[in-house]
Length: 123
Image 1 (cartoon, rainbow, N blue to C red):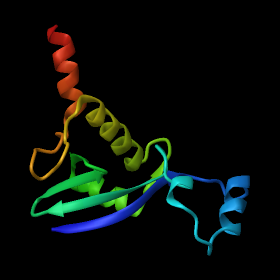
Image 2 (tube, rainbow, N blue to C red; image 1 turned 90 degrees about the vertical axis):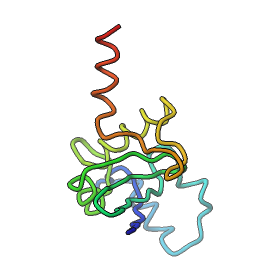
Image 3 (tube, one colour; image 1 turned 180 degrees about the vertical axis):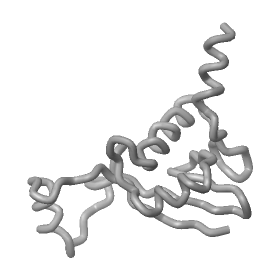
Image 4 (tube, rainbow, N blue to C red; image 1 turned 30 degrees about the vertical axis):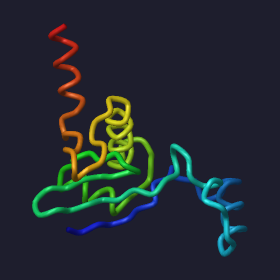
């Protein structure tokens, strides 16, 4: 099992006020509550044999090998990034109560949104 920790956050333009503030506090201790919220968090990207998972807190979703590589390379939330796609899939899994407490219980499936659409169309 290979576990990679990534810091998920939105992309910040180089000349922005936020970027200047973070540079000012770069080497200082900052309590976790000031930089962890729904758009700034730590995620675990897991490779277990030939399966791949994305875990935040106690919620885990299954991902593809391509998404695994891309989210490690670029963990930023913007337009069409893999991190943003996984962010929304994880939020939906949390909302539905899927993927809790992996590996004791199954992770949320890759085709989560397809399954939801099938249920809606059958009703």
